[in-house]
Length: 325
Ligand SMILES: [Zn+2]
Image (cartoon, rainbow, N blue to C red; front, side, top):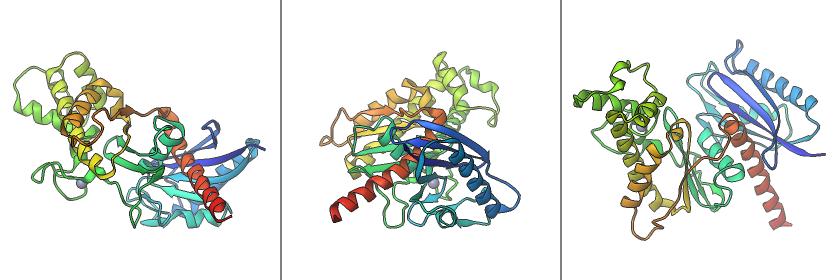
């Protein structure tokens, strides 16, 4: 019987899951609301119910479960989600282990995406790379020698909160000038509004309120030659390249992969980012280091990332068994 793992993405509003083969084919998809009456206990019941549905419909053996979640911690199997009605931190892996005697692994969504890119996406041929997710914030996963770098407590690689400017923009983390306040969909918006205030030139972006303006609007404006939008992308790409050049010094990767909505801006972002990366990187490193877009299908990236965590875990277990005989 074919082997599959269940990849589960725990989003703030929706949980999606799928049965994923070793080569990344998705046999079944399920989805349900994350926030339900009854808190975490009710959520777990619903989750297991959906897994049972999946088991009944898929003619394959489930050999593991991978879970991706914002603020998920690999070391402890916990999710600390302030936006969920789960009463603070929950031990997700421990709870799921009550129902399934399978290898279960949980991680934050940026780390899951990094492993997903290595198994199924743009980083298949790399063993050393940095993955950056560019959504409303900036997340990252660092892969060294084919494994994620976790640090002692599972929190390594929070590049969104490295400092660009000590006197800079307020960050949700309570500090000032963090990278994600500049390089992310929200960061791009903040840059546009700063430019609109500083310059008098005409721009179609003056029509938008802060709440209504999206990265998509800014991309469209840039593509039609809007000077404010073009300058905002130049600034964003420049800062991204500058900080990636620093990140390269820590792990000397073969490549850097960018994932997330902002990546759809294509050359608007990649051109200034690549230029700035090359310009600021120490001469010892590969000046042609590729800066690549994600190759995961956007709609299934979260399921594939979560599933890849489980496949990765099984690869490690197999290696340990082989080494110890
Ligand atoms: Zn911060």
